Image 1: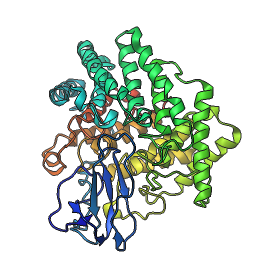
Image 2: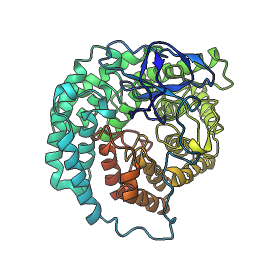
Image 3: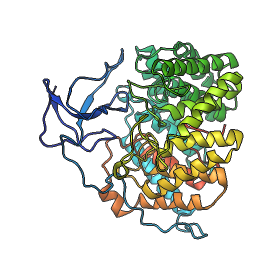
Image 4: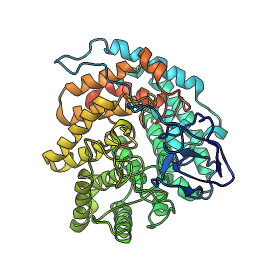
Length: 487
């Protein structure tokens, strides 16, 4: 591939400032690559000239895997020294009262109008059902389900659920046709998440058929039980074992039943632990559990250590005493990787303060959920204190320019405040979430944020933002979509 150092092109990459068209072969310095299909940023930390090659091979059965090569600051345009990832927070902090302008009478019409916008744009053809819950129509179906579950939208409940069923049926048909069985077991990018949401929608509609998608979901546990069932890394949230456990956890919460047997859950948890032990030994890590995804030792919620440990804590009852010790040692190790209230994208990296990532996917907003789970289990104050520090950083740097979404947008930042409200009962955090919601409708945000390329997306687009606005109306029940710590 030849890197053309001409004008940078706009892209859907989530981390780098600019990207370049490629062809041929040349030696140059790179920051990393972004995979549209697998929704992840693959950093190349080397800061010297390297031979440009694809750092991975797309998985078998991939229908679409487009890679964008992104140049580092050593060989491309660099933004100004000031932080370019977020807007300056213009708001005064909490002084004892919430915002009366964000009443039910104000927010409900905004939600209804936003849902209408999404429904006008969501694809409703099986040929457009790729992307799973993360980026596909299935995520819109989940959003409609979430809105319909709120009593404030009871008048729209039947319509939203019927629309959600139509969308999720098409998505399930697409998942059934997936030739790669490993992708069918993926939570946010494949069939497992789609089947889980289908069961939830069917149950809400009172349909006995909800057992059919549940059976499809349950049958996938054997796919992800082998330690190395995915070459790219078998344990992360989007396509790996942690995601499959997360889906089972959501089903338990929403349906009130344990979908997998204790032995099935134990088998998956033990595979995660053994995989982490083997990797840590092989790489000679000074801590018990570590994982990589496409060769990168991520720490954040999207593909990293924090969400893996969060799922193990969620099912710690099936672990032996020795296995629990390994998990808790790893939780404390990750806590010690904090750098000024934040965590680097990958293990060993040094955060550049003027250009740090403060996202759910990479950074404090996602890591906070692990320490919230740790605190809920053992009530040790250091875990709550860590969550509170995450919240302070988000208040400073959480008004992100990447858009309104929950993966790396303003709504994802604001969910940290709703999490902290549920942990502490402090109304300050509702106020902060209200302020972030207010900012979404300012002219500064509209003109200064990145335009949406995935308008309907649950994680990158408006569907996740709608879930946040609904949860702002019911903060006592608020949870980041499909990522519960209160189970």
